[in-house]
Image (cartoon, rainbow, N blue to C red):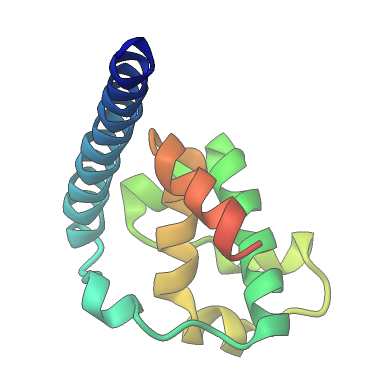
Length: 128
């Protein structure tokens, strides 16, 4: 009888924790979705992901933008990436690649630099 009650309590704790995380994740997604609409970016357009090598490079660029207040502010205020600054900081990246994956970089920069801990954790565990 005691074991049954303990098992039930543990299940309830896990469900409670999972539901809190789930709600937080949903809130983050909705917030990010609204934020990206300011840049004319829809989630459906982000379904295609760059190839493996490009993904890692673009993630590094996105982290750099997300962690650099000046670049992130410029992105937020002007709605565009500072391509020349990115090229100066990351030798070997063509402007064509940056332009082709602009939406990916903007989205990931906002995730890395914004209030999205659940999404960052998901990316860390599934992509990186």
